Length: 236
Image 1: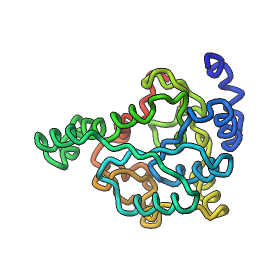
Image 2: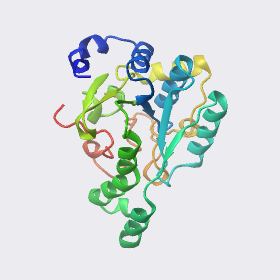
Image 3: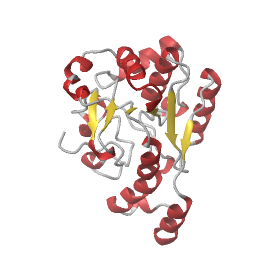
């Protein structure tokens, strides 16, 4: 696996489908897609299922997701016969956090919001990545100021140096939606209500015309803090 970072330029030139096919051949069952069931995720799920019906997809159920997200999860299961691997936060940690700070602590400060994300997302992600050599995400450079440097192939230092693949890094939003329409892929109903980015229900709102696509995520914070910690990129 040491040679993969050295091949980053070659891998960067691959299309999304080509990179997925390479990942499935290279890592087999030790690669999985992390899906929060936004538009990018359903594109990747459709591509993966066409390449390999046994490809792995996992999601982090924070306990605060929107009904529309659960509806889409079921639609994806039915469409592809996909057994989605679901990871929940540790109940004891959630109970202690809520007991100490309240159920909506994330509105009070960035520190509290990051604690909530840490318990509901980051810790479960660590468990989801155990045993994997690589993971796939729907990150795109166009999504936010915190993501402009995203590469298609990265070394994920924060998770033990495994490979992180972002096949749609160079895609535009228009390309994502053109694929969804052309392939008739099921998508989250929140998108039709002005939600370009999907997250936990209390931390996500619709955006207005001309607003940044990520403006609806943690809208009470400044743009440069709008990451939950799942996609920290130390010095890269």
